[in-house]
Image 1 (cartoon, rainbow, N blue to C red):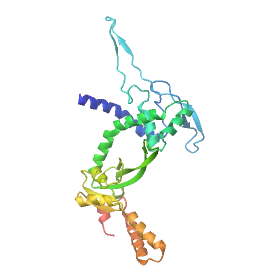
Image 2: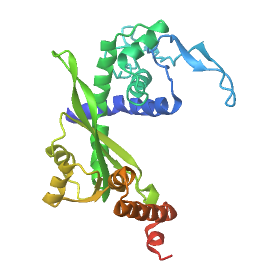
Image 3: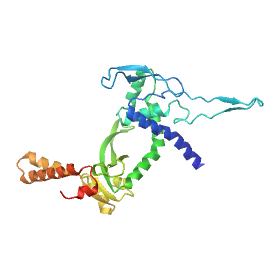
Image 4: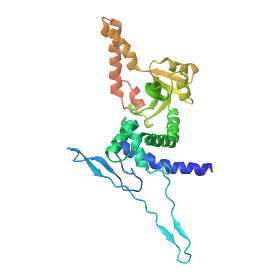
Length: 295
């Protein structure tokens, strides 16, 4: 039963993942808005690559699914028809393309759901914000194995970058928002010719306690590039990771001292950092052997 359920989830998530890539690369993508029915009107750019031209409204027709019925001439009571493919939203009309467009608009293009609802309404498509929120929640549940796999893959790296930022979060019952934390763990070895592909995983936490990065990085052993946040030091104290602090954050303190007035030591430190940046620029993108070579 578990294997069958896992196969069903894979069948539903595969087209969504494909459409997420399409929507992220192609911008506005409304195909699949009403399932098998003719699509409503959407916005597309008219003109050429050199002259994009004005926005114009154009009808978008989706792909129809044909499921013919077959009957046996010798046994009139037997009629066979292929089962309908599983939908991302069971019992709903949206296809994977529609849900992918909502996700990309919300998380990549920073369009809140209420604004998306207004955009669709101008095109004659009434989609309540609560409906869009339900789609986002269902898609997030289906994409969770992808997120977990991405984070697990990043943890196998020898070095990672970590940072966190505040994010306003709804606080039901209080009539206002509260401050949450969004943590990012990234890998990008391209500047030094690494073979591993770049990637980043985001995790939400309600606060900035040191236990958050400890829980996030469970299983990771290597170098973690961070800013000066004291919460990361608990990782180093446990012996799991080595911390590599960010030069940009260190340089900022010397710069503040230098611009405030005569500060020979700070000015000299800034010059030395510039020299280090010059060396880094020369060897960026080269393999490890070339980076270590003298000259």
